[in-house]
Image (cartoon, rainbow, N blue to C red; front, side, top):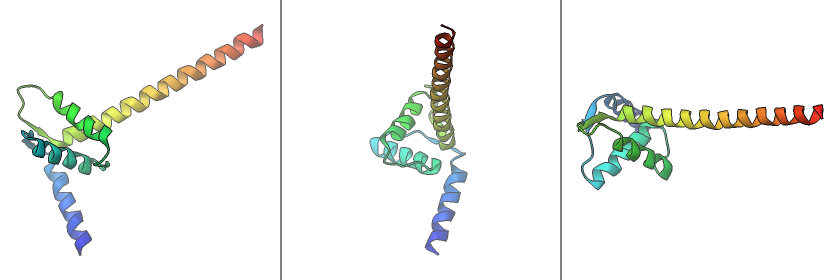
Amino acid sequence: MKKIIEKMKLAVAVLLSYLPTALPLSPAELEKFVDDVLTLGGWDVANISFRNSVVTQILHIDISETKATKRQFINAIKRSITNQLSYNMMQHYKQQAKEVQNEATQGAS
């Protein structure tokens, strides 16, 4: 029964994440906001890198905005992860191409 209640609470939190909420105005509010975003995203709330990502995303919100959806932070972090992964793969492919080119050059000599 306890698991069902926890799942229901999470389901409600997911639905509420689509509604704009006030941005945090105190350290305690910020900690809770970051915890909520990371929990909803399925990430480790103790991970400093993810915590930093949420706070950085807050800094990128338009200065005239006082509310935002938690979902927008989740999506921004997912996009950051995708960008980083894509960049790393791009570098990997460039290195592979360079190695193939070097082998072709050495083989032609």
